[in-house]
Length: 269
Image (tube, rainbow, N blue to C red):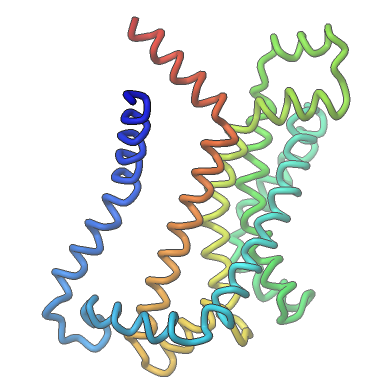
């Protein structure tokens, strides 16, 4: 019974920590905008009232939100595959890292939004361009964090694998990937926020659907309240995706968090 109560208590504390600040900000927004008569900043009550009609009582979830999420997912998954694969290769070999490092530093310094016109020239105006825009921004946090994680693999574990003859894919999976996984997940969290931003930017250029397209159309037609509903929905999606990624991180790295907890417990003794 005590264990169940402890689990419930930790769950409630986690929910409070996750939702506390967003709820407080929404309440503050509601109070500060309650008496607003500005056309460009309507009260939150009007925005929430319009939210239902714009997004929930129409086909916009299927016509605009779903395509955006599919593009984001495709670009993000490609970035994970490419970033982790290249990161393991570059981080594992000193000469490869020395060869690629100047080029990587140059490419990651180029802001991904400026690549949108270039990608339009080569990939056109369809979904391929939008996926490549997301990929071009998401790959760098994942790649660089993977490289650093691979470089930090414990030398004792490396020697242990060598002594036991663990080589090839088994060594990469059980030693390199697992040791670097905390850094890799950090890169995924950073890449997710970048991917959402680039998803919206790509949909503001020569698109006919998507969240970014809808928001810019509302702005151009002076449907300001509807525009704010799109911004609010975008924030909610970003928040939910971040929570899902954090839950995945807690599950995938349960051994890592358990190790840190045991180290803290030992330090308090």
